[in-house]
Image 1 (tube, rainbow, N blue to C red):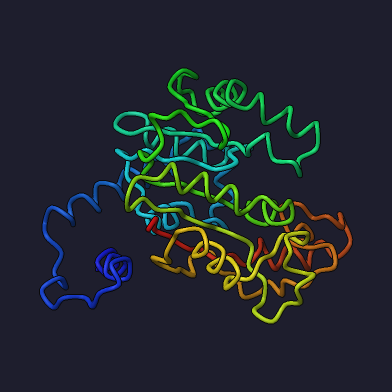
Image 2 (cartoon, rainbow, N blue to C red; image 1 turned 180 degrees about the horizontal axis):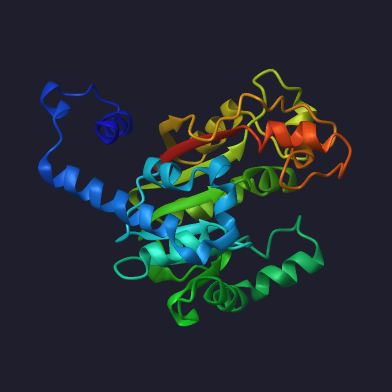
Length: 282
C-alpha cells in the first residue's frame, strides 16, 4: 500500500479505489527486495558499521527509496564505504552498483580535492573491493562530469547520503543535480538523507557550513532542476536534535567535535535529525 501511495504522488493523480489492493506480483517483488535488503544489512562483513544502524536505519531507508537488487544503483560521494558495504553486495548478482564522485572540474574545489576526484574512478573500486569482497572490476566508479554515454539515462536510483550541505556551500549543488538528472532513466529517482535544520533557522546557519539544510530549500532546489517530490519519510528523524550548535552538526556523534566537552549530553542526543526524501525525474 505504501508503494501505491507513493506512485500516486509521483503520477500526481488520485489513488484509484481498485489500487488499494496491490497485485500479487507487486507484493512478491516488494517482499523479495525487502528480504534481499535485510540480508545485505545483516551481513557479517559490515562489522562495526552495524552499531550505527539505530541512527541510520539502512533497511527502512532503502525500502523507502524503493531500491531493488536488479537495479542500477548509484551512490553519490561514496567514500567511507558504510553504504557501499550494503549496496554493492545487494546489486552484485542481478543489478549494478555505481560509485559517483564529485566533478573534479568544479571551480570551488581545492587543487588537492580535484586531484582526489580525478583519481576516484580508479581508486575507489579497489577500496570498495577490500570493504566488500567483491572484485574491483565489478564495481564501477565515475565522476559526474565523465559518466560514460552508455550509462546516461540508464540509472534507476541515485542515493545521496548527508552530502547536500557540502555541495551547497561549495556552490555546485545545481550543476551536480543537472549531471545526476541526465544519468537517471525516465522515472528514475533520487533518494536523499540529509541533516535537517529547523524551519525557522537563519539563512547563515543553513548555507551548508553547519551541515544542516532546510527541508523546504532542498525540495525547491530539486524542483528547480527537473525533479518532483515523490515521498517524504520520518525514518531518520531525531526530535532530540536541536540543530543549533555553534560548531554545527559535527558537535554530535559520531564526530564529537568538542571532544570531551559535554560528551555525555551529545551522546544522549545521538546522531542528527535527518530528512529522508524521494524525488522522481520529470
